[in-house]
Length: 197
Image (cartoon, rainbow, N blue to C red; front, side):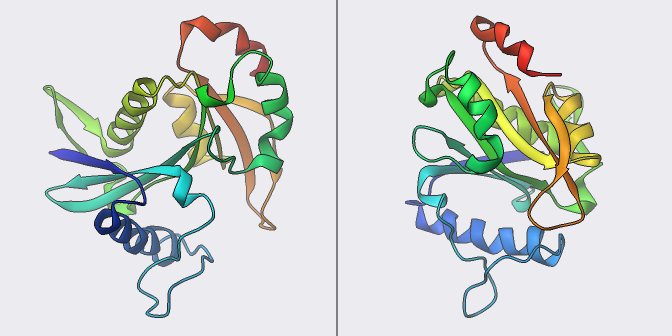
């Protein structure tokens, strides 16, 4: 059975747990080069944490997944990457109605596992997205943007309704190609579909 907890950086107990789990999932498992604290047991907070919300996904009280999202009125992660789309989108939607998902990950051993949810087996990543989507809609978010890797990330987000924004390109000085994607959460703004090629 899955459960989630949603919080911000002011909830110091859960935020510290998030930083510890972020190290496990992104540094230990994903080989990301993120700055660590002196103990090297957790990732240091970054410039967007104070303006973001966090979700820890658990199964039987064990953290198995994590996500972070930011409403653009507060901060703008990946501004340089998404700015050209944001400039177009801003003609239609106010900043406070747009969010970016800045991280989304499930531990490798749980990526294809599922749990019963209303008599239906739901994969962990789908469950995490469902919780994020409910939280975003409750905050009146109309559009969600994400930058993800071309391949597995693109495939997953396409499957849950995200659409490509342009073509993939090399980012962050890596050999991995990344792609910008978006999803409209409100029928009121379906005209924004022209952005998605």
